[in-house]
Length: 262
Image (cartoon, helix red, strand yellow):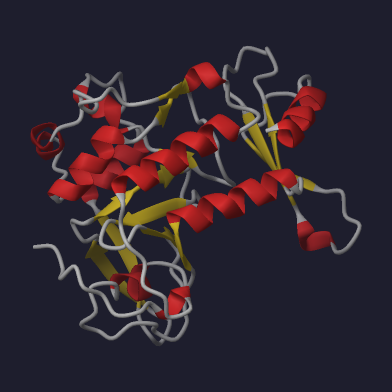
């Protein structure tokens, strides 16, 4: 059962109240994917008017995924990116729910297994592990990574916000009352929540200020773009870059030009 649509002001949003708008989320992601300098425009796929036919409540249930009508409707209309590991942020690429309507190859993608299990690790107030907890049915996983450190951004369709999950858990003072339908964020996610609109603005700024650097496929046979993010751990003046699935440097100058044009 979905929570009451009326929510108290969110302390994580400066005591503002966010609202869920499917069209706004779809529009923001479409524009952001088109902005990405390392992702070919031909790889960004927009949903047909009636939504993706390979995503239905029945198909999701066949895979053991039980979500609200709002979540299914959102997944049916989201844009998706073709290709292997189309990185959009550090350790994060979009989950492509379209594949659920087709036969998998030898192995089920790791993120599909995660979504099927539908649970996250709980960290108790004293910092000790607290087992696992099911994600609410009105929450959907938008992104994933390639290992346990992958960035999984969870979107809440009650208010259109995203919160990052981390498998190792967090330790901080709870933000919400225990009975608040958003309290799951305290137990199984990080301390920061943002509207999807603000999260996308933040990522755009990171690209424009060159703290994120996308590099298109280098033509070396890997067939996927790369994403580098600046490592600030070495202090001011550091030129270190951390690498996410690097495939080459050949298109670096083109990429830099595109960042400032888009």
